[in-house]
Amino acid sequence: MSEWLRDSLSFCLTYWWAFVALIVPIAGLREFLMIQTEWYGISSGIETLPDMFLWSLLAVVIIESFLQISVIILVQAILGKQNQGFAQRSSRALMIMLPFIFMELMMGFSVAAGLLVFIVPGIFILVRLSLAPYFLVIQSRGALASLKDSWACSRGYGWDLFFGLLVTTLVSLIPTFFMLEGTDSSTALLSNAVLSVLSTCLGVWGAVFFYRAFDYVQANPRFVDQ
Image 1 (cartoon, rainbow, N blue to C red):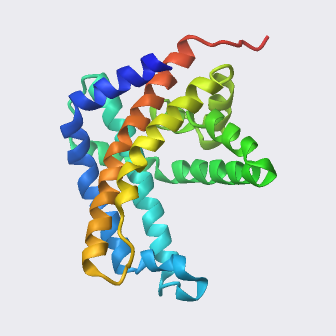
Image 2 (image 1 turned 60 degrees about the horizontal axis):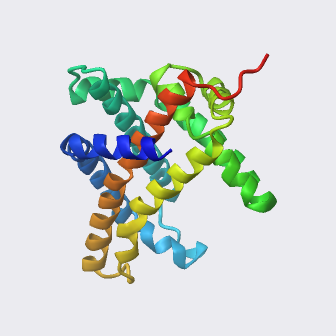
């Protein structure tokens, strides 16, 4: 696991400029939409739900999914030394958007069910399904097949994936600790939006870590079903 973290961090530091160029515009659009729809005021109560909330939620899900897919495709392009432009990568991301969102929803429901049972099962399910996006994007597997492949290939690597998830998630959350309270202030909104984009940039370490894990566990299965 430490080797995966080291390799993925080195990769991120080497190609940080490519990730920043990809993430900042897309994450910036996400934050702009969330500010315009008064997203950050939702936590104060259900009665404060903004107009067109469901449409804005759908838009955020689409943007976030597009971003996740694009990061995986970019890592694949860099490793494969493919000279793909933004338009080419975006076209591919859009083509697999629906199955990716469907897969994410199934993951979300499974993890939520596990968390409701006793928290730990939810974390276990999250870890075992964490490789599913890579099967779907890289190997063009279906949503259900990707989840099944992730569950099978991650067998025996649970602790490695868990600690990698823990470390990279904590790092990505660092900027959120400095977010300001008071969403009525334009200064607070702008500051929080910038910190959120920065958090997304730091989250690339996690995406690259799981890409590294995805490659390794397939080539080195710890359990082979007879």
